[in-house]
Amino acid sequence: MLTIRRARPEDVPAITEIYNEAVLTTTATFDTEPKSLADRQAWFAGHDERHPILVAETEGAVVGWASLSKWSDRCAYADTAEVSAYIKEEWRGKGIGRKLLEAIVEEGRRVKLHTIVAYVSQGNEVSLHLHKAVGFQEIGVAREVGRKFGRLLDVHIMQKIYE
Figure 1 (cartoon, rainbow, N blue to C red):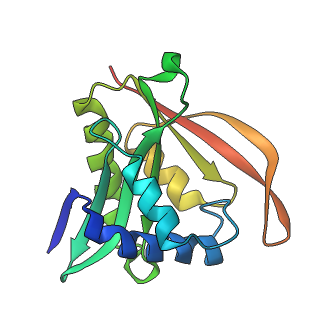
Figure 2 (figure 1 turned 90 degrees about the vertical axis):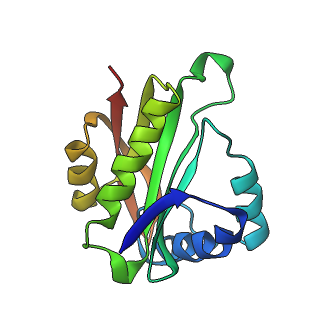
């Protein structure tokens, strides 16, 4: 059984492990070095009611997470957030990412955001499809903006505007 719930401080080690797995093995993030637990604890503390972190839990373990983060510190952007979602490798392809993304999109609606933005790296067709399935539209492509695993990669910019 899968449970999606608000993340708690005790979830940060699992969140860190899942994120670092993505850092080392995927282009889903353009971080190139694993994050420390202290770094992820500070990141967690930087989220608030309007910028939640959710986790997917099954069999007593956190297997994925999603967050809404401030898009900018400038006040005019207060109603915009950036969405992120990561699933532990052995749990990918089981529908958990979609459920997490749907839940975090609903959180954005609940806290009355106007829009959320996602950045999806070149070649991540599953993520592109998933974002489109929950109402995001591709609004542009930033060409060759990140270098990872020895390759320059494009980033698809996606947006969901709440109606």
